[in-house]
Length: 359
Ligand SMILES: [Cu+2]
Image 1 (cartoon, rainbow, N blue to C red):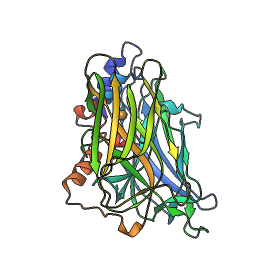
Image 2: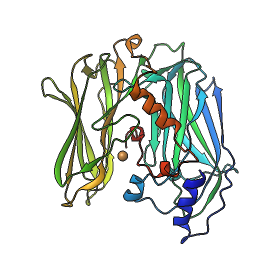
Image 3: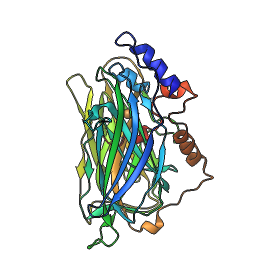
Image 4: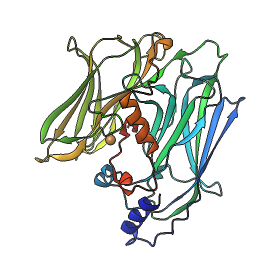
């Protein structure tokens, strides 16, 4: 983090003298509480220097302190139900969740449905609430799955924070759960993704539309959806590209100045039905913006829909193809995160905004 922090420290100097960068290497530990059915991950310590407030421009410059991906082995057979996040300092005092700009959990042992890219199990941002799925569904997990977590910190509390620890509590259903939950996996559909690169686009003045067509290698049901957009977003919709029919839409929630506050969510079903999606059928995800500024906003747009997907047959889920160039680019971008030697990396727009999860 040497270069990242010194660049940011220079910016922050006017506000407060920066601490020297003495962050000790942070470690990760994983424990299982099999009576409470939780896997608990603890990572830290992190020394987080105060940074200027994050506005939308700095956010798009990725102005945050990115950790590398920290790997660990998932320890139990069962179904992941969600996650809870807490932050505390070395004395156990709570630290504001706000300093965690985002956190992403990657499953390197499984592929995404739409992309040749590692599964993103879940993500949390500053405003994202903790998640717990209904007990009727769960994400199937096996011992030894290679998971990785990374965080983009942005401490704008006005003071430096020392020895911050992140705890992620992941409730699971054990393998002998009765009745057996349905296998539900995350699905991510972006209107403009270059896997391993960026998914943002320039926003032309006025109304604009970006879309991406795809097919699914396995059919199933969509149980719920959310999404992610930036300022002046309108909606993200999923369409049947063969009939033109709109399957579902999530709406941007804007304040009176057009700034994004969130994206609506929908839950169709907690078991059984939901929205049917067929294998080898063309679908289209469409993002609509309405930019009133009269000018193009460079890299101002981003639009994706995320959901919970129940495959007809989990055995049909596509395997990872390590020779696939898209897959290799995704892996390379994850491995490059938080690289100490590359100052440019910290100034990238969040490549993995695949990673933003839902607002
Ligand atoms: Cu974004």
